[in-house]
Image 1 (cartoon, helix red, strand yellow):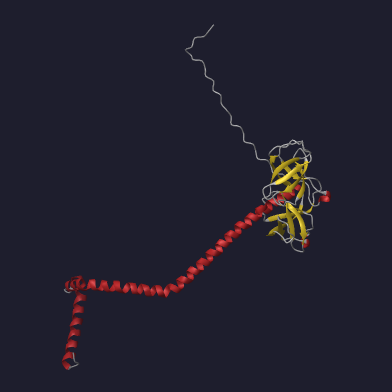
Image 2 (image 1 turned 90 degrees about the vertical axis):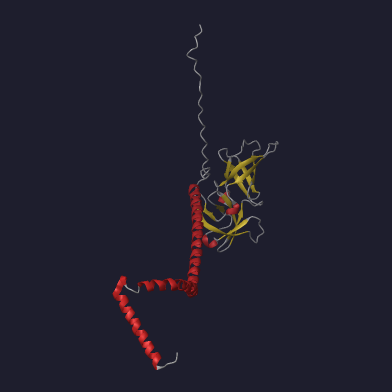
Length: 310
């Protein structure tokens, strides 16, 4: 439509009519004469509005997601880092608890045997000296460690110190084939020598070939001259097999060591021997024997109807 005088008058007329209808609708309230026209318009244009809204809403959501994606990514990254830190903390706590328990066992063993010890941590396995079964600990001459000192843990004999540096030392394990320690049987006091055979077994030669030994008997260290390299009374292991007696002068035993050599972590180096031989007091208590189950004997009584015999 061209901008003419007639078109302007028509526009003013339409605006005036619109204001008049708005006034009538407001004053009429719920009884407005235009209510029917409003419902008709809603019925006609409602579906169109819903369609437009459905088409526009995904676009708005996508725009919002793009706008917030940076903040969400940062939050996810932060939560992942916090989760990893929590896992590391929990793992560290478990390890610390395990080490604390092992240290408590070592201190209990040292207290029972009256050994003065220096605690140390295993930091390496094997050494440059060519020994097949050795460990390196984080304690050396600066900590009072010297060659030929006994090394133990909460379970029993670990080995002896062979090489000492300023801050580290090498320990030859009792599992090594070149390892030898004097032993004494619990109660019977039979003396012998134990040699390493790997992590699962020690071979013990008793000096008395006729010694009465049975499976389950236990051994401790006999002790050395001036307590080097071994102090007395340290638990060694338990007999698992007694070799048949063949008339030899010695008796051969297979002994399972108390120490798990493949799981060493915290150990104690005996820096001062006990004043007296602790004998068998350091050995772990024997498990209690199960009590026998009581048996009940039921005796059948004679029948009341049976007649007595003369």
